[in-house]
View 1 (tube, rainbow, N blue to C red):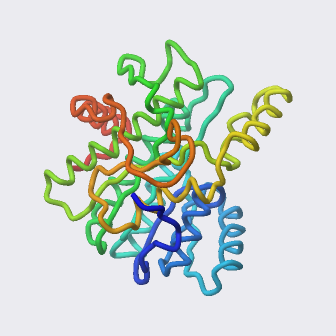
View 2: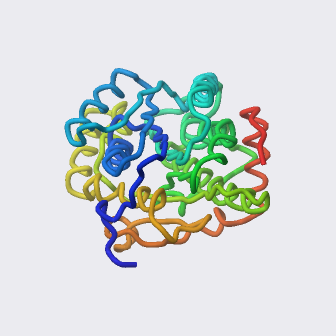
Length: 307
């Protein structure tokens, strides 16, 4: 694949795009570039004040940018349902959904307001529900796409369906990796089901490698001061710029020639950094049996049934 940059993003004029977690990091870069290329971008953010600050920052770079800020906490199914209801009442069609929001917590086990393990509930289950609730509107979109954000950590992970919520055994890094494996398997299974249904929507996946953002610092925020310092040092010396990491999901979201099920990440050593390229998901993520089982569990847990 030739070096793909933000200048290669096709014209997004007339398109409506939703970016979850758009107030900082990868989400902010993604929202900015979509707006720069003409999309009406809905910044779906946990804190509306942060979303408004992000919108101000985007408009400083992109005068005339078409932006809307809406509250969305993907760790709360009630918030997901309210957001989806707002969007479908305001927009007949949505052309692009970028499931970017995510969380990592390296301290003890936490639960979402719905009682889900924090990583699984935030990174996968909330986006599973959001996608299902918006799918009719997305289906009416022009060349519609759904992008799910994975991580290189998914390759080391395993989904233990007998302890999916990490109730018997909890390790933060393990739980984060499992949530990203679930996200990856969801993106692939979504593609299978969309194709089987003859849907015009394509589901793609991307991961940013190890990219610089506040996400890493937030992951360490509940640790001791020395550990937080280590996190800041790691972020400074071992990561690539956020703008480079975001290119992978921007490519998945906008580039021509992208097919359902395509997975994009950095092409450098270990996929930690580098230019956008097609990459492979782990065997477990690609396993249709795993995808079907995860889908059934997600439907049961969220109460959102589709495809």
